Image (cartoon, rainbow, N blue to C red; front, top):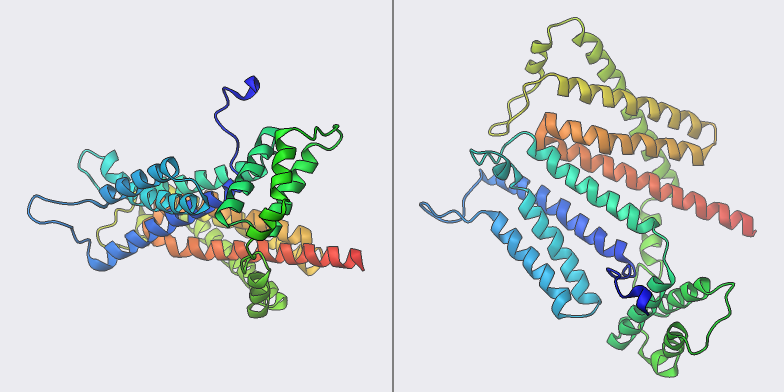
Length: 361
């Protein structure tokens, strides 16, 4: 017991799911606020000298998100806390330009890449948590959370079996102690009383969502959409390479004329950012060519991996540069890249499932 006394805490079961909710709420909030303000002409809440900035509403949402898990225990409280944390963080960071400039400049050019970089850091944290191996200490808390969900009526048979399987995997190769805390928790989870409190799986856990997606988006259509997106990336790369070559034939200062005026948004005047954006497009295009060649030769797995490299390069390097060079107008292209990434990841899942089914046959 003493070995765990100074622990910060066990990794929460399915922590990555709560973090996904926070990331999604964060991104949607920032995009929604920026779109609304631009459409409505940047209105103010208040009158005269009074101006209620939306950062205050973000602080309120963050405060409630922090209070909920302190006052309430349960899956619903965690879900609402994760949602409010994303909304609050989005409302807060949307005004980061005001905090970085002495003139309280909301349209400060580096604000957009800072916001986008914050989302990328959250995604990196999600990847770390998702790949982190669980310890015996973590598994014990997984069983405790499953027992809590059972008491609340939120535990499904699948979730219970998953928690028990994690415990059996953790004790593999070691003699089990029937009186240990994990074993006591397993017996409580498998008791007749708990059997009566189990709830039915949701439509996602039952596979209904997956079957609906496959009906609406057949594998053949999904594959052709991926081919089309990769071909567009190649075309963009060719045009970018052409602009890069043209930039060597003119004065760098003239490149600024390529940037259109977008009202109150501040665009950087340094042409280097435009050149960097074009260079990233070329790199993405090369990876897209590799992906198309591999897919055409029937090397689906490697081709999809190359497509992932192209899309992730576009999202990380390309996104940071583009948000600086094009500001919030880059939001549409980023959403399209995220959708393309979803298509590639889903086709990888379908391909893996088909390989497993063939092996079983």
